[in-house]
Image (cartoon, rainbow, N blue to C red; front, side):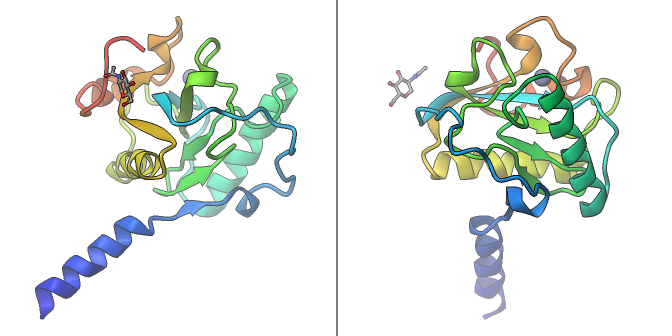
Length: 182
Ligand SMILES: *[C@@H]1O[C@H](CO)[C@@H](O)[C@H](O)[C@H]1NC(C)=O
Ligand SMILES: [Zn+2]
């Protein structure tokens, strides 16, 4: 009896993997006038925030608020990413599914933008962060927000930028649906 129970539990852990909802870190609800994203999209674009890392839910919530404030100062409609991965290993809803992001000019209407909080030029995200991103991708495909044959790329593959950092890009190259071109 022990093994099936364990299997069941790990299945449940996967199926109900938590995405921390936006209202957990942001008091302002998303404007109902945000542009919609026609789903499923064909691209997942990975970013880093190039900001300080966060390690606890409290730090990560503060980091998300700072990132959003920075994006508003740059005249974005809201935080620019669909989702963010915290150093606490949690998946945070930014714009969420179905909303067009502001993260990769020319590709926003064809993609979901996922940002790792921190700078990954010289260090890799923790295994928990990498696992959280893989879980998010699985959820996105299951919910038909992303095509099953999606392409995974780093931001620097769409324009000249260091984002998502050299170490993180080297890791992404090993992922099953990474593509050399968007
Ligand atoms: C991916 O799947 C879609 C829908 O099934 C299809 O239209 C498209 O051609 C496929 N793209 C690639 C690159 O295989
Ligand atoms: Zn980027």
